[in-house]
Length: 367
Image (tube, rainbow, N blue to C red; front, side, top):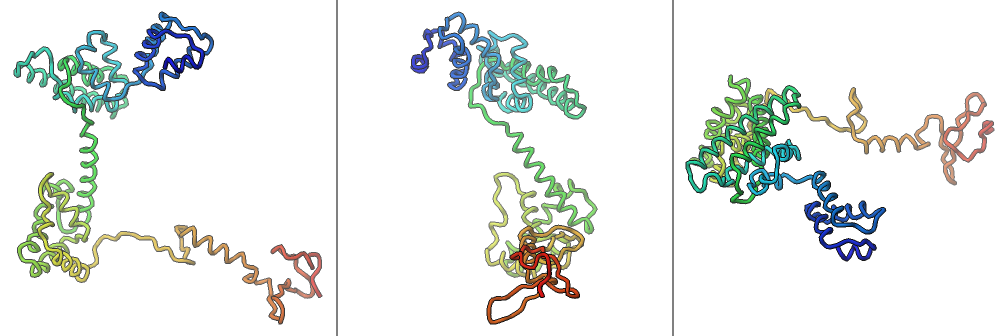
């Protein structure tokens, strides 16, 4: 930074430059930006001016969620922070900051406990209760658009957990696992809904019943004959599939729903030849299902009532219509020389050409 200031003709002392770097959180782009702005009119920057400007820069600095989580539980930072400063940590990104706090608060070591496990457990219990209250407030905010409650959520989801577990983090800050778990839950919900729709004529349960009760037994009814009887159990496995109107792809859904994390895939115990025989027999004996997956056929020339057809085919049709030989008003004479196009005659009167011919006979018809 001193080299850049020297080349740009900015007279600045090292102490003043240190203040800029500290105020910019050691971000080189932010340092260059501040130097450019502050030296636009004045090339000689004093230390006092830099301290004042550095404090202003701190207020406009946006921290990432990892830095925010570290400050929430840092007792050293709490000594120089007011209640409003602690609340402002939440508003750096109020959508994900509570998730970082919830994920990493068990790793915080509260200094108030002084190694006492009982006190540590009490602080953990208080933190968990505060986070639960923060979740209730967030639900009210999201469901009722009560955004005026954000400061209240900041207290329950950030300020109070930071006070209860004020000390230091004993491990690496981890990304919230709730996001991945929520995405996985939504995926399982879609799978259960699809299975329930396929089996709805044969069962009376809801999609939750399919996930909790049916999928495990259906998986065993299909997989166990293949594992224990091999080729002889293929017929029983296919019968179990067709009885409940299941598709071949539904078997993968059943395995995914009924398999515990970290457990071995039961399909790995089935021989590859048995799998192939199962697939062939299923494709041969499967009956038409009561549900239909609509597929739009893209056939050239078939427009129907919908305009769902390929753009490439439309372009090909347009190219065909541009051919003058296909026009009903154009007659093509075959001679020893090149093909000559003439304008059709109607009672001896010529018709004006719209195809951009050579221009001959444009006013009158040829005789």
